Length: 231
Image 1: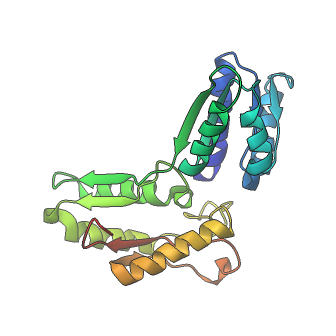
Image 2 (image 1 turned 90 degrees about the vertical axis):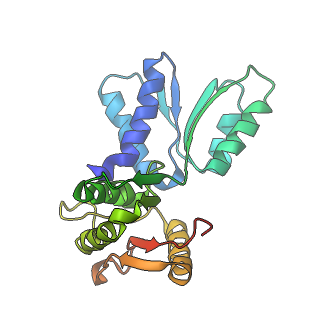
Protein backbone atom coordinates (compact mmCIF):
# COMPACT_ATOMS: atom_id res chain seq x y z
CA UNK A 1 0.00 0.00 0.00
CA UNK A 2 1.34 3.51 -0.74
CA UNK A 3 0.35 4.58 2.78
CA UNK A 4 2.93 2.16 4.20
CA UNK A 5 5.84 3.88 2.42
CA UNK A 6 7.37 5.39 5.61
CA UNK A 7 7.12 1.96 7.22
CA UNK A 8 8.83 0.35 4.21
CA UNK A 9 11.72 2.86 4.33
CA UNK A 10 12.15 2.37 8.08
CA UNK A 11 12.03 -1.42 7.90
CA UNK A 12 14.35 -1.43 4.88
CA UNK A 13 17.07 0.56 6.63
CA UNK A 14 16.80 -1.41 9.86
CA UNK A 15 16.66 -4.79 8.11
CA UNK A 16 19.67 -3.99 5.92
CA UNK A 17 21.74 -3.05 8.96
CA UNK A 18 20.68 -6.23 10.78
CA UNK A 19 21.43 -8.40 7.74
CA UNK A 20 24.95 -6.94 7.62
CA UNK A 21 25.52 -8.14 11.19
CA UNK A 22 24.98 -4.92 13.10
CA UNK A 23 23.05 -4.21 16.25
CA UNK A 24 20.64 -1.34 15.66
CA UNK A 25 19.14 1.58 17.54
CA UNK A 26 16.02 2.57 15.59
CA UNK A 27 15.01 6.24 15.95
CA UNK A 28 12.10 7.33 13.76
CA UNK A 29 11.20 10.93 12.97
CA UNK A 30 9.33 12.39 15.93
CA UNK A 31 6.15 12.67 13.82
CA UNK A 32 6.14 8.92 13.15
CA UNK A 33 6.86 7.35 16.53
CA UNK A 34 3.90 4.97 16.40
CA UNK A 35 4.82 3.73 12.92
CA UNK A 36 8.38 3.17 14.11
CA UNK A 37 7.22 1.35 17.23
CA UNK A 38 5.05 -1.08 15.28
CA UNK A 39 7.80 -1.63 12.71
CA UNK A 40 10.25 -2.63 15.44
CA UNK A 41 7.59 -4.75 17.13
CA UNK A 42 7.10 -6.67 13.87
CA UNK A 43 10.81 -7.48 13.76
CA UNK A 44 10.86 -8.50 17.43
CA UNK A 45 7.85 -10.74 16.83
CA UNK A 46 9.72 -12.27 13.88
CA UNK A 47 12.56 -13.29 16.17
CA UNK A 48 15.04 -10.41 16.18
CA UNK A 49 16.40 -10.18 19.78
CA UNK A 50 15.47 -7.07 21.73
CA UNK A 51 19.14 -6.51 22.64
CA UNK A 52 20.07 -6.46 18.95
CA UNK A 53 17.29 -4.10 17.86
CA UNK A 54 16.32 -1.31 20.24
CA UNK A 55 13.68 1.38 19.70
CA UNK A 56 14.52 4.91 20.81
CA UNK A 57 11.90 7.56 19.95
CA UNK A 58 12.43 11.24 20.54
CA UNK A 59 13.16 14.64 19.08
CA UNK A 60 15.94 14.83 16.52
CA UNK A 61 17.60 17.82 18.14
CA UNK A 62 18.01 15.95 21.44
CA UNK A 63 17.89 12.18 20.97
CA UNK A 64 19.20 12.21 17.41
CA UNK A 65 22.01 14.61 18.25
CA UNK A 66 23.08 12.51 21.25
CA UNK A 67 23.16 9.35 19.15
CA UNK A 68 25.19 10.79 16.28
CA UNK A 69 27.71 12.36 18.69
CA UNK A 70 28.23 9.10 20.60
CA UNK A 71 31.50 7.35 19.57
CA UNK A 72 29.89 3.94 20.13
CA UNK A 73 27.64 4.49 17.10
CA UNK A 74 29.62 3.07 14.18
CA UNK A 75 27.27 4.21 11.44
CA UNK A 76 24.06 6.08 10.67
CA UNK A 77 21.46 5.37 7.97
CA UNK A 78 19.31 8.46 7.55
CA UNK A 79 16.37 9.51 5.36
CA UNK A 80 15.33 13.15 5.55
CA UNK A 81 16.42 16.65 4.67
CA UNK A 82 19.79 17.59 3.21
CA UNK A 83 20.28 20.11 6.03
CA UNK A 84 19.87 17.43 8.71
CA UNK A 85 22.15 15.02 6.84
CA UNK A 86 24.88 17.67 6.83
CA UNK A 87 24.41 18.24 10.56
CA UNK A 88 24.76 14.49 11.19
CA UNK A 89 27.89 14.40 9.02
CA UNK A 90 29.46 17.26 11.01
CA UNK A 91 28.56 15.66 14.35
CA UNK A 92 30.09 12.33 13.38
CA UNK A 93 33.23 13.95 11.99
CA UNK A 94 33.76 15.87 15.26
CA UNK A 95 33.85 12.73 17.40
CA UNK A 96 37.10 11.52 18.94
CA UNK A 97 36.55 8.04 17.53
CA UNK A 98 36.95 5.92 14.44
CA UNK A 99 35.44 7.54 11.35
CA UNK A 100 31.78 6.56 11.21
CA UNK A 101 29.75 5.59 8.16
CA UNK A 102 26.88 7.83 7.05
CA UNK A 103 24.32 6.62 4.52
CA UNK A 104 22.05 9.58 3.80
CA UNK A 105 19.03 9.55 1.50
CA UNK A 106 17.91 13.16 1.16
CA UNK A 107 15.44 15.17 -0.89
CA UNK A 108 15.94 16.41 -4.43
CA UNK A 109 14.41 18.19 -7.39
CA UNK A 110 13.60 15.02 -9.28
CA UNK A 111 12.93 15.46 -12.99
CA UNK A 112 10.72 13.26 -15.20
CA UNK A 113 11.75 13.59 -18.86
CA UNK A 114 9.67 12.29 -21.81
CA UNK A 115 10.12 12.70 -25.57
CA UNK A 116 7.55 12.31 -28.34
CA UNK A 117 8.04 8.54 -28.46
CA UNK A 118 6.40 8.21 -25.03
CA UNK A 119 2.88 6.82 -24.87
CA UNK A 120 0.93 9.72 -23.30
CA UNK A 121 -1.42 7.42 -21.37
CA UNK A 122 1.49 5.62 -19.73
CA UNK A 123 3.39 8.85 -19.20
CA UNK A 124 0.51 10.49 -17.34
CA UNK A 125 -0.11 7.39 -15.23
CA UNK A 126 3.56 7.20 -14.22
CA UNK A 127 3.80 10.95 -13.56
CA UNK A 128 0.73 10.83 -11.34
CA UNK A 129 2.06 7.86 -9.40
CA UNK A 130 5.50 9.36 -8.90
CA UNK A 131 4.32 12.85 -7.98
CA UNK A 132 1.25 12.19 -5.85
CA UNK A 133 1.55 8.73 -4.25
CA UNK A 134 2.09 9.13 -0.48
CA UNK A 135 1.04 12.77 -0.98
CA UNK A 136 4.41 13.32 -2.65
CA UNK A 137 6.25 12.64 0.62
CA UNK A 138 9.07 10.60 -0.87
CA UNK A 139 12.62 11.59 -1.71
CA UNK A 140 12.08 9.90 -5.10
CA UNK A 141 8.86 11.75 -5.96
CA UNK A 142 8.73 13.58 -9.31
CA UNK A 143 8.83 17.37 -8.92
CA UNK A 144 9.24 18.52 -12.53
CA UNK A 145 7.90 17.00 -15.76
CA UNK A 146 9.74 17.85 -19.00
CA UNK A 147 7.76 16.95 -22.12
CA UNK A 148 8.70 17.42 -25.78
CA UNK A 149 6.66 20.16 -27.50
CA UNK A 150 5.14 17.67 -29.96
CA UNK A 151 3.10 15.98 -27.22
CA UNK A 152 3.04 18.66 -24.51
CA UNK A 153 -0.51 19.94 -25.10
CA UNK A 154 -1.96 16.43 -25.17
CA UNK A 155 -0.08 15.39 -22.05
CA UNK A 156 -1.18 18.49 -20.10
CA UNK A 157 -4.81 17.93 -21.10
CA UNK A 158 -4.65 14.29 -20.02
CA UNK A 159 -2.82 15.20 -16.80
CA UNK A 160 -5.53 17.71 -15.88
CA UNK A 161 -8.22 15.10 -16.52
CA UNK A 162 -6.43 12.50 -14.43
CA UNK A 163 -6.00 14.96 -11.57
CA UNK A 164 -9.75 15.60 -11.62
CA UNK A 165 -10.16 11.97 -10.57
CA UNK A 166 -7.86 12.16 -7.54
CA UNK A 167 -9.61 11.45 -4.25
CA UNK A 168 -8.10 13.28 -1.26
CA UNK A 169 -9.04 11.86 2.11
CA UNK A 170 -8.57 9.26 4.82
CA UNK A 171 -5.59 7.04 3.85
CA UNK A 172 -7.27 4.12 5.57
CA UNK A 173 -9.90 3.97 2.81
CA UNK A 174 -9.19 2.09 -0.40
CA UNK A 175 -10.98 4.84 -2.35
CA UNK A 176 -8.38 7.43 -1.27
CA UNK A 177 -5.55 8.41 -3.61
CA UNK A 178 -3.91 11.21 -1.60
CA UNK A 179 -3.73 11.32 2.18
CA UNK A 180 -2.48 14.07 4.52
CA UNK A 181 1.03 15.46 4.68
CA UNK A 182 3.01 14.76 7.81
CA UNK A 183 2.36 17.94 9.82
CA UNK A 184 1.26 21.57 9.76
CA UNK A 185 4.77 22.81 8.94
CA UNK A 186 4.89 20.66 5.80
CA UNK A 187 1.41 21.87 4.82
CA UNK A 188 2.46 25.52 5.12
CA UNK A 189 5.52 24.97 2.92
CA UNK A 190 3.33 23.43 0.24
CA UNK A 191 0.66 26.11 0.45
CA UNK A 192 3.29 28.85 0.22
CA UNK A 193 4.78 27.19 -2.85
CA UNK A 194 1.33 26.86 -4.47
CA UNK A 195 0.70 30.56 -3.83
CA UNK A 196 3.99 31.42 -5.52
CA UNK A 197 3.23 29.20 -8.51
CA UNK A 198 -0.20 30.82 -8.86
CA UNK A 199 1.59 34.13 -9.43
CA UNK A 200 4.53 32.96 -11.52
CA UNK A 201 3.25 30.05 -13.62
CA UNK A 202 0.25 29.00 -15.70
CA UNK A 203 -2.08 26.64 -13.83
CA UNK A 204 -2.73 23.24 -15.40
CA UNK A 205 -4.88 21.77 -12.63
CA UNK A 206 -5.36 21.82 -8.88
CA UNK A 207 -6.96 18.66 -7.49
CA UNK A 208 -10.29 19.04 -5.69
CA UNK A 209 -10.39 18.79 -1.90
CA UNK A 210 -13.87 18.63 -0.39
CA UNK A 211 -15.09 19.68 3.06
CA UNK A 212 -14.24 16.30 4.59
CA UNK A 213 -10.53 17.23 4.67
CA UNK A 214 -10.92 20.82 5.81
CA UNK A 215 -9.59 20.18 9.32
CA UNK A 216 -6.54 18.01 8.63
CA UNK A 217 -3.10 18.55 7.11
CA UNK A 218 -4.36 17.79 3.61
CA UNK A 219 -2.89 19.47 0.53
CA UNK A 220 -4.60 19.39 -2.84
CA UNK A 221 -1.92 18.48 -5.41
CA UNK A 222 -1.30 20.98 -8.18
CA UNK A 223 0.42 21.17 -11.56
CA UNK A 224 1.68 24.35 -13.23
CA UNK A 225 3.37 25.11 -16.55
CA UNK A 226 6.63 27.05 -16.21
CA UNK A 227 7.77 29.58 -18.78
CA UNK A 228 11.38 29.36 -17.65
CA UNK A 229 13.64 26.95 -15.78
CA UNK A 230 14.65 29.88 -13.56
CA UNK A 231 11.34 29.53 -11.73
